[in-house]
Image 1: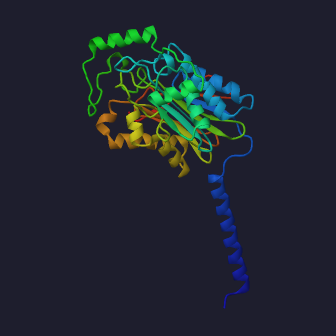
Image 2: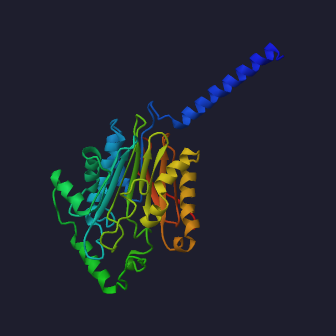
Length: 339
């Protein structure tokens, strides 16, 4: 027979263990509900000005979704920024096409790709999320929807971008086919690198513990018309899970798409990695799968968990990210890199 005292002791220990396991599980899975320290982070040096605009929303107790939508409009409108928005470099045929995505903590998301003639694709992406049953609209269909929603049709090819395109045409040595890789980037440098990066990705955490993200780009300079990178693809260029965290990417979108990069980063955080560890592991996934190609291109990941911890990693040196919260407004940090 089992001693009564031993039986009670064992039962109590078992109940305590189950309760503890329940608390640990809840801590991992439950969304933050109490007030937290608001924060916004974004890719590259132009993220500093974008963060300030987003912070103006967060500092007033605003929603993270409104903050990221507001923030990324800054580089979209910057005529000196040739990798995002209306001043972006065109494709091989001289046409400026824009991509954008937006996502909230509940999995609501919207995106547009290969969109022409609309200066702020992020605004159209949010309309897709809120006013259609779809996630992604592309090309002429995206433009038709934008015009129906009242957006103004504009010529996006600026004189400066057009001049750069004509200069590129003089020295361009490739006519890429569907199965060939674009190798001649001219003066724009390393694909996805400091002089040829193509994205602003922004992640925000508001005072109510809500996460959101946005990603917007004019894509790779001189790309084939119709090329779409990772930025408007949910799970590649952007992913948000209110129970865990959020991630975004920058660089050569084809490599991010092949690995569902931002989704991978969030899932690695779900398994217990820190944002830094998750970004590193996602980068190494690309390097290990395509070691020869990885030496000649740049991909970077930026992530934040639901507690506001931040991490970043890249293949090559040079990737930087901006951080903004109540204590710091203009912080620009270098990401660690493989090489």
